[in-house]
Length: 313
Image (cartoon, rainbow, N blue to C red; front, side):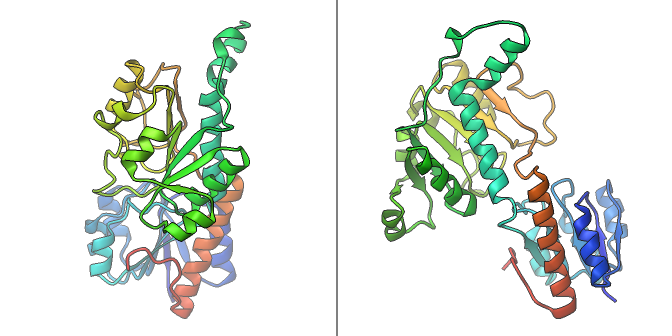
C-alpha cells in the first residue's frame, strides 16, 4: 500500500481526501535535512510547501519515493534534476493560487498609487494629513507585466478593467494572441522604460536572476512603481533600495524575498515600500483549492498511475 509523508503544514482537505481513498499518511513537520533524509524511507509520496527544501541529498536518501506534490506554483525548493534522475514525478497546482496572487498584486498597486499605507498610519496617529497623501489614478497608466502565465493573464484582464494600457514581456506570448487581447508586446528594455507600474509574474531562473538591477533601474520613470509577487531574486533588493533613496523610482511592493523568512529587512521604515510576508496564496479559498488539487493528483497517481501537472519533464 502506497504511503505519503506530509512534511509541511497543509489544509486538512489533504487528509480528508487521503482518508476517503484509503491512502495512509503521516504528517511530520519542522524536519531538518538530515531528519528528512531518515524519515523519507518507506514513503512513495511526499507533500511539501514552501517551508521545506527537498534537496538532492533527501531525494537520493529515498528508497521507494515516486512522487513529490507541491500545493501551489513555485517548485524552486525542489531539486528537479535530482528528482528526474531518480524517476520521481514532481507535481504542482498552477491554477489554485491565481486569483489570490492577482488580488494581492492589485492590493500592493493600490497601496502605493494611493499611499494607503502612510495614510492609514497617520490616521492611527490621530493626524489629518490630506495634502501629503496625494496619489495617482490607474486610468490611462501603462502596466508592464513580466511573464504571461496564469497570473500574468489575470493581471492583464484586471488592468484592462481599470482602463490601463497593458504591455507584456513574455516568450510565451505570440503576436497573434497579443493583438487579439489588445496587449502590446515589448522587449524587457522597452517595457521598463514605458511602464508606470512594473509587475513580475515569471519564474526565477539563471536568466531572470536580478532582471531588475542598478543599471536598468536608471531607465525607468521616476514616477514608476515595481511589484514583485513572483520570486525573490528576480530583483536586486539592494539596487531597489538605492534607487528609491535616489528617487529614481517612486515605490516598491513585494511579497517575496531572496531570503525567507524575511526579518530585519533592508526596506524597514521606508514609507515608499509596502511589504507582505509571502502571503500571495494566503487566502482560505486558495489554500483549500490547492490542497484539494494536490491531494487528488497524488491519489490519482498512486492508485491509477495518472500524472497531472508534472513540472520536471
